[in-house]
Each structure stands twice: as structure tokens, then as C-alpha cells.
Length: 202
Image (cartoon, rainbow, N blue to C red):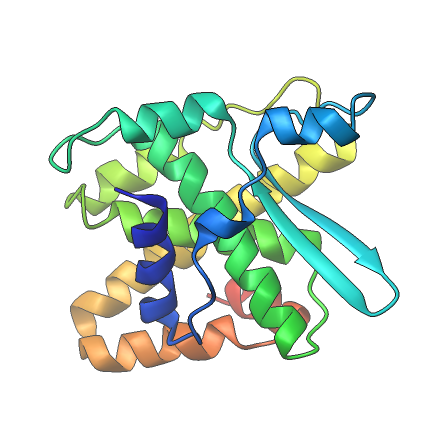
């Protein structure tokens, strides 16, 4: 699946105003090294630079993820690479929406949204929901270099993301699909505190 296809899929899912292609925001290691030689990029991430009221966003996926995605035919899927790209594109779109709507957002909330979007995209590839929940949430592999605070945030995002996704898939079976999607889109537009409280009450 191409990067822009992931982007457009999420924009359509949440009824977001389309942004320019994610390709325009990709940061390549070679370009980064020319101006930030003392600060290595590290793993996939969304980078934010703010100067006054001007905010700039960039998405770093890394050469390996890009090559693994590009090496596959439309019928082949490299799930780890696809999920890595989906997570960063999710972060990017959620930040863009929050900035455009002057909505403060927490780091935990950004990570939770990424977990949800990975599941929703992968659910179209892996029909067995319990299998998918176990694949995406059962055995998270965290970067050993993470600080205790960052690791705790990722662990909490994993727990909340799994809880929301399990609830949403059950709701899809019981309710009209249109109603479930409307609730999903309303959830996307809540403020961070309300979103996290909503999940805790499920």
C-alpha cells in the first residue's frame, strides 16, 4: 500500500479535509544530515518545528520502512512496515487537524490515535479480529533506549488502544455501521481529556 493511499484512507475514514500528499512532508536521512549532523534522526517519527505562530511538520519513516513498502506488490503486505508508516501518518494527520482547529493535544492521545488507526487499517487485511488484536497489541516491542516516561506512555497507549478497538469492533457487529462510524468520527474530534476519559469508561 502506498503512503498516500494510507493517508487518503484515514482522511476518508474521519471525514478530514484532505492535506497535500504525505510525500511532500517526508524527511530523508540524507537531507537531515546536511543541516543536523549532530542530531541523528533515529526511528520513524513526526518532527515538529515552531517559530512564533508558524508550525512546520515533517515525517521521517526511514529508508528501511520505505524500501520494504515499495518492494511489495499490491497483493503483498509487509505488516510491520505498513503499521510503522500508518502510525506516523496517523500522528501527522491528527496533529494537522488539531493545529487547524486550535485544539491542544497530549502525547498520550497522539499515541492512542496511532494505535487505533493501525488497527482499523489492518482490520481490512486480517479479518479475524481476535487474531488482529493479539498481533497488534499482544506483544509490543519497545525500543530499549526509551526513557521510563516514554515507555510508560507507549504501554498506556497500547492498553487504551486495545480497549477502544475491541469495543469498536463489538459495536460494529451490534449497531448500524453508519452509526458506529459517526461515533468514531465524533470521538476523533473530542479534546484529549474527553477522549481518554471516554476510553476509560468503555
